[in-house]
Amino acid sequence: MISPASSENPSVKRKQSLTNLHVQINNNKCYLISKRIIDFALALLGLIFLSPLFMLIAITIKAEDYKGPVLYKQIRIGKDSKEFYIYKFRSMVPNAECLKATLSDQNEASGPVFKMKRDPRVTKVGRFIRKTSLDELPQLINVVKGEMSLVGPRPPLPEEVAQYTNYEFQRLSVTPGLTCYWQVSGRSNIEFSEWMQLDMKYISKRSIWVDMKLILKTIVVLFGSRGAY
Image: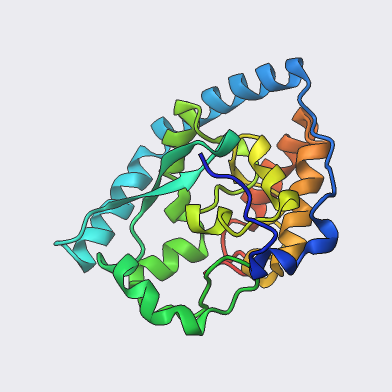
């Protein structure tokens, strides 16, 4: 279980004005039940119908680097601060996590996240599947398991959550998702503060209608997505 960072932490002070801002979360029971049914059905269908694409991506990953694994799993923080393993197609060299510390001074993102437009750890195949978000498809497994939803705030890393303010910590009150407003609004081109505001907008306004619109928008921007790296 992870709790919000202390107010003594300098990283928290960057948003002191928002720390005590409370967001009203839509937890309508009928909506949540309907959302879970839709998530499970669409994710299961996606895994079945996209299986040939999964095989093709796996073959290309192995063709470039046969020694490394096809899938990559990483601990993320989900609803109510519960940890779970997120699944992705591997888009980086096998020792990417070990190399991350050596690149910390080249971070191009604001807030407690790490992003590099030309990250040297990303493979050739990885650049393509990250640009098209195909690397995220294995997370349909997480959706079937109930750890994620098709729509919701992206699940953060434990070290990111450790730097959250109380305001940012509220995004962990809902099940994380494959896509949300951030994915269809520019992704890594968006400042961290705006990203958090978009997530707060979602958790307060979410509904089946909003979810369906975001899923359709995600499909539209999937290829050549802005800010995807």
